[in-house]
Image (tube, rainbow, N blue to C red):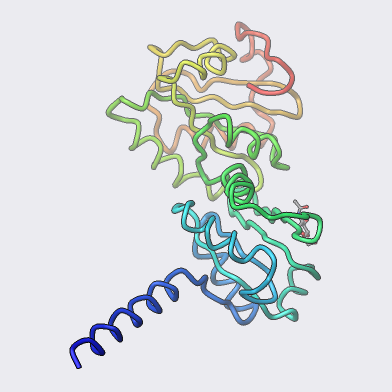
Length: 256
Ligand SMILES: *[C@@H]1O[C@H](CO)[C@@H](O)[C@H](O)[C@H]1NC(C)=O
C-alpha cells in the first residue's frame, strides 16, 4: 500500500514537472494581444502543436532565457492576424514596436542554441545594455537614433539612472532607442571615445543619429528626467544645433 502511494506520488510529481515545462497556449487574438502587452519582450511560437518541429527547442530555450516570457499559438486563424501562414517563432518587443520572425520552414534544423541567440540578439528593451550581442539587435532596428546613457556599473547612481531613463523611454517608442553603456568595461572605451569621454567623466548622456551620423552630448549636470526628456524632444524638433558637435571626434560610419 505504502509502495503504491509512493509510486503514485512519484508519477504525479513527474507529470507535474512535465506540465511546468509546457509553454502556455494562447487561444485567441485577444489573449495574444494581452500577452504581447504584458512585457517589453515576449516570444511566441506559432506552431501546430507540441509535436511540431521546433517545439522542444523552444521549451529548452525558454528555460535558458529567464528575462523573456514564452507562449505558443496553435490556432491558425490567430496566426493570420499576424500575417503568418507557416510555423514561425516570433519575438515581439515594445521599444520599437517590432515583430522579428524566425521561419521554421526556412530552417532545416532548429537548435536550442540558435534559438537562444535569436532571442538574446533581438532582446531590445526600453533601455538595452550594450554588448557584442545586443549591438546586433540595436543596429538592426529600424530606429536609428540612440539615446546613450554612459555610466559605470559600480557607481552608486547606476541603477537609479537606468531605471529613470527606462521609465522615460516608452514615450519615445519607435523614435529613439535608449542604450546603456557601462563605462567600466574596457571594450566600451571606444564608444566613450566617440563622444570624447573617459570613464572618469561619467555619468553622461549622449545622442547619436545613425541617419545623419551626427552626435550630441547633454551638457554636464544632473541627469534628471526633465533634462533628458527635453534633450530628446529638442532632437525630434530638429533643434539640436550642428555646432554642438564641434570638438567631438569623428565617428566611424557604422556605430558609435
Ligand atoms: C514579421 O512578419 C510579419 C508578418 O509577415 C511582418 O509584418 C513583419 O514585418 C515581419 N518582421 C520583419 C522584421 O520582417
